[in-house]
Length: 158
Picture 1 (tube, helix red, strand yellow):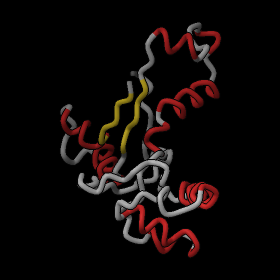
Picture 2: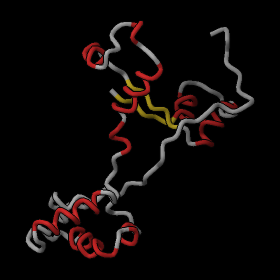
Picture 3: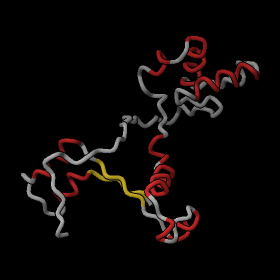
Picture 4: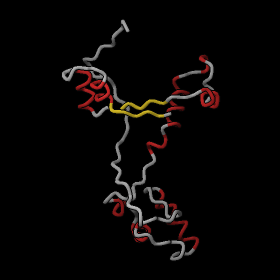
């Protein structure tokens, strides 16, 4: 199970004072905490079912695998997406965005050549685009690790 939440708001909800420097820093940074909870079967599958098997590298690999969906986003609704696409494939991307079936317009070789190029831009022309459903607008946020501020001290008593 993957849990994602705003860490600053979570601290405030759990009783941190509004002027708490850690909670304020988390809110200011827009800190998002991502946790992965693995059950016994998944731990066995990943080779992490014994404490001696657990390493930082294996944990990082498991985290990357379980959170991969966070890095896969349909970017086809971004306003500048067409300008980023090479000119030869741009017209085909625009047609697909309007709901046209490119298999009927292109030869097999051309279709797959453009499909390969457009896939790099988050557009999959091998799947029909349903223009009757309103697409969800997504704001892409780059997830990066964050180090604690220099003034933060770990509570060694805890």
